[in-house]
Image (tube, rainbow, N blue to C red; front, side, top):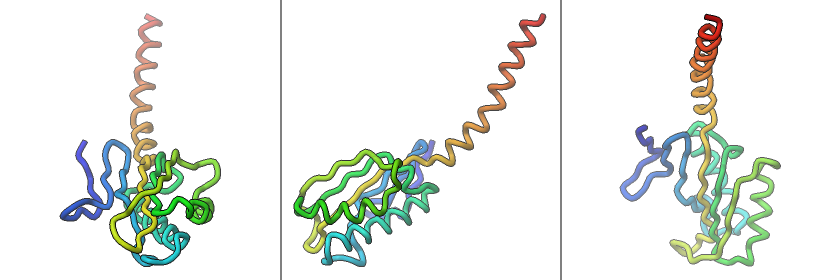
Amino acid sequence: MALKRIEPGKRMSAAVIHNGMVYLAGYTPEKALGKSVAEQTKDILEQIDETLKQAGTDKTNIVKANIWLTDIKTWAEMNSVWDQWVVPGQTPARATVESKLAAPGIDVEIMVEAAIVKKARKAAKVARPAKKSAKKATKKAKRK
């Protein structure tokens, strides 16, 4: 299966699709650079929503999230936005750590991995007729 890259650049791609999964790069604020952690988180999650849409999936299919904060004391502030964004009952596995980030004014970075469920459903539908045909052939063979 070939890789599909979303917004490939000189250094990295915004995301890479492979084998029914999409792997997003670490996202940092664009519009909210230098603003509050809550504003940065909201900005990043909007970017993630857009990239997931380009990949043919959405936040309900995120299986893993990694979050970096420049100050772990802002964890509750970040979570206030995160908790409004995630869908209850469909939250991913997640880790949040404190770390120095790439440039001044960037206080949050988020990276996610998500399943592309639509393709899996299509593949399952295609596989079903073959499975049914095998069952019919087995029944016919038993009758003889």
